[in-house]
Length: 288
Ligand SMILES: [Zn+2]
Image 1 (cartoon, protein in one colour):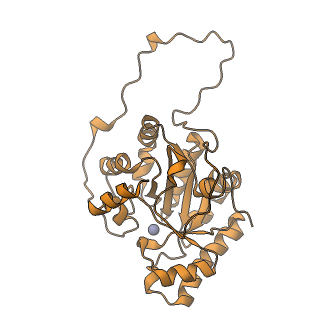
Image 2: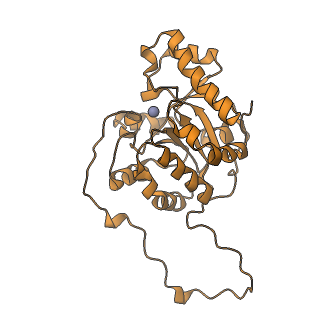
Image 3: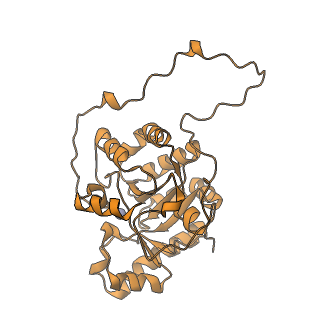
């Protein structure tokens, strides 16, 4: 991302930058529908010749986007604070999904990544049962590197209000869950709840190996309950090359929009990558 664009967006008051992980219900509108946002009708089948092959290749899922990691330049270590991806990655977006207050939404995300090949990074808030309920489905995706797990604390506090000891406990409990349940470390990526951090919290995180505060540049805005059209509008606004975008596994709205999200990615020729793909190399995972 260009620094100029970043500053312009900040000046414009980037709602997506500021609203992630809030507990409010931002701009929720109910009883709305968005016929203009539905998928276009399929092309008339009469114009498509039938395949002569007696044993055609099985058709891919309608959600299919990619197989494996995208082409990426040689990785460089992440800075201590990241809000976007390196410019040289090209048409790549990093979708990151936080919290996990609803186990069924995490489950739906896992079906989505299996069907689509989308690569994403979960920022796990360890206290929620989602992260143990879905272990059997999630573990092979973590082991393959398609899904990355990183640290979003144990109970989602504002880190700047904690004593050093309490902050260490928050990070360590989540880290222990990731190690014991999935055999990986969340380090070096910590996402501070509400984006609240400072040099002191950064220093404490770094002592535990969490040397990169993974911020974002755009959000689906769905930490609280949104209507489908509002969420889709945010997705259209922020799913752009070199962005780190936040979604939340908290409400089922997003699970109704996976097809439209794939359409946006296709229309923009975007492929997805985990933070590990970008900063450590394609397919990397951090087994311990
Ligand atoms: Zn959060």
